[in-house]
Length: 95
Ligand code: SF4
Ligand code: SF4
Image (cartoon, rainbow, N blue to C red; front, side, top):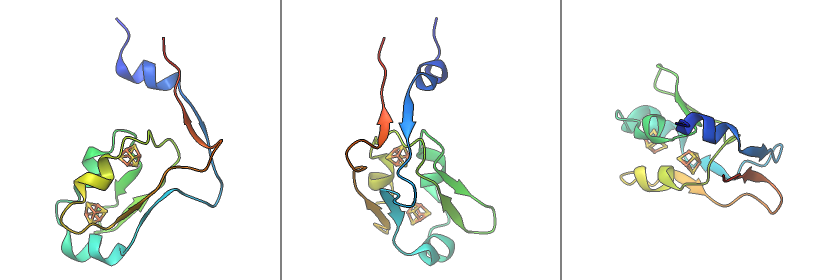
Protein backbone atom coordinates (compact mmCIF):
# COMPACT_ATOMS: atom_id res chain seq x y z
CA UNK A 1 0.00 0.00 0.00
CA UNK A 2 1.46 3.37 -1.07
CA UNK A 3 0.98 6.21 1.40
CA UNK A 4 -0.19 9.70 0.43
CA UNK A 5 3.19 11.13 1.46
CA UNK A 6 4.93 8.79 -0.96
CA UNK A 7 2.60 9.80 -3.75
CA UNK A 8 3.19 13.48 -3.07
CA UNK A 9 6.92 12.91 -3.10
CA UNK A 10 6.65 11.86 -6.74
CA UNK A 11 5.48 15.34 -7.72
CA UNK A 12 7.91 17.97 -8.90
CA UNK A 13 7.79 21.69 -8.25
CA UNK A 14 9.28 24.53 -10.25
CA UNK A 15 9.81 27.63 -8.12
CA UNK A 16 9.06 31.03 -9.62
CA UNK A 17 11.72 32.81 -7.61
CA UNK A 18 10.60 36.10 -6.10
CA UNK A 19 7.07 35.79 -7.51
CA UNK A 20 4.92 33.80 -5.08
CA UNK A 21 1.43 33.18 -6.49
CA UNK A 22 -0.23 33.43 -3.08
CA UNK A 23 0.27 36.14 -0.49
CA UNK A 24 -1.23 37.34 2.78
CA UNK A 25 -2.84 40.72 2.25
CA UNK A 26 -2.51 42.12 5.77
CA UNK A 27 -0.15 40.11 7.99
CA UNK A 28 -1.19 42.12 11.06
CA UNK A 29 -4.69 40.69 10.72
CA UNK A 30 -3.27 37.19 11.19
CA UNK A 31 -1.47 38.29 14.33
CA UNK A 32 -4.15 40.43 15.91
CA UNK A 33 -7.51 39.13 14.72
CA UNK A 34 -7.23 35.46 13.81
CA UNK A 35 -6.50 33.32 16.88
CA UNK A 36 -7.45 30.08 15.09
CA UNK A 37 -4.91 30.56 12.27
CA UNK A 38 -6.61 27.73 10.46
CA UNK A 39 -4.45 28.14 7.35
CA UNK A 40 -1.52 26.70 9.29
CA UNK A 41 -3.41 23.50 10.10
CA UNK A 42 -5.31 23.07 6.82
CA UNK A 43 -2.66 23.56 4.15
CA UNK A 44 -1.73 20.02 3.04
CA UNK A 45 1.67 21.20 1.83
CA UNK A 46 2.61 23.01 5.04
CA UNK A 47 3.08 26.33 3.26
CA UNK A 48 1.64 28.32 6.18
CA UNK A 49 3.60 28.10 9.42
CA UNK A 50 2.42 29.60 12.70
CA UNK A 51 5.52 30.91 14.36
CA UNK A 52 4.01 30.86 17.83
CA UNK A 53 4.40 34.61 18.29
CA UNK A 54 1.20 35.33 16.37
CA UNK A 55 2.92 35.65 13.03
CA UNK A 56 2.24 33.45 10.03
CA UNK A 57 4.99 32.69 7.55
CA UNK A 58 3.84 31.74 4.06
CA UNK A 59 6.23 30.03 1.67
CA UNK A 60 4.47 28.84 -1.45
CA UNK A 61 7.17 26.42 -2.62
CA UNK A 62 5.50 23.03 -2.86
CA UNK A 63 1.97 24.46 -3.02
CA UNK A 64 -0.44 21.86 -4.41
CA UNK A 65 -2.79 24.53 -5.83
CA UNK A 66 -5.72 22.98 -3.97
CA UNK A 67 -7.31 26.32 -3.04
CA UNK A 68 -7.95 25.36 0.58
CA UNK A 69 -6.28 28.45 2.02
CA UNK A 70 -8.43 30.74 -0.08
CA UNK A 71 -11.59 29.14 1.30
CA UNK A 72 -10.49 28.52 4.87
CA UNK A 73 -9.63 32.20 5.42
CA UNK A 74 -13.33 32.98 5.09
CA UNK A 75 -13.71 35.42 7.97
CA UNK A 76 -10.96 37.83 7.02
CA UNK A 77 -10.52 37.05 3.31
CA UNK A 78 -6.90 37.81 3.86
CA UNK A 79 -5.40 35.56 1.21
CA UNK A 80 -4.55 36.88 -2.25
CA UNK A 81 -4.66 33.78 -4.43
CA UNK A 82 -3.66 33.24 -8.02
CA UNK A 83 -2.36 30.40 -10.16
CA UNK A 84 1.38 30.20 -10.77
CA UNK A 85 2.61 31.55 -14.07
CA UNK A 86 2.76 29.08 -16.92
CA UNK A 87 5.62 26.63 -16.57
CA UNK A 88 5.90 27.12 -12.80
CA UNK A 89 4.37 25.42 -9.82
CA UNK A 90 3.44 21.84 -9.20
CA UNK A 91 3.86 19.09 -11.76
CA UNK A 92 1.66 16.22 -10.68
CA UNK A 93 2.76 12.74 -11.53
CA UNK A 94 0.08 10.10 -11.51
CA UNK A 95 0.45 6.36 -11.37
S1 SF4 B 1 -6.65 32.07 8.20
FE1 SF4 B 1 -6.31 34.02 7.06
S2 SF4 B 1 -6.35 35.67 8.60
FE2 SF4 B 1 -6.12 33.70 9.68
S3 SF4 B 1 -3.91 33.48 9.96
FE3 SF4 B 1 -4.45 32.42 8.06
S4 SF4 B 1 -4.17 33.94 6.40
FE4 SF4 B 1 -4.22 35.04 8.37
S1 SF4 C 1 -3.47 26.30 -2.36
FE1 SF4 C 1 -3.49 24.48 -0.98
S2 SF4 C 1 -1.37 23.73 -0.96
FE2 SF4 C 1 -1.33 25.82 -1.82
S3 SF4 C 1 -0.86 27.14 -0.04
FE3 SF4 C 1 -3.13 27.05 -0.27
S4 SF4 C 1 -3.79 25.35 1.07
FE4 SF4 C 1 -1.57 25.15 0.76
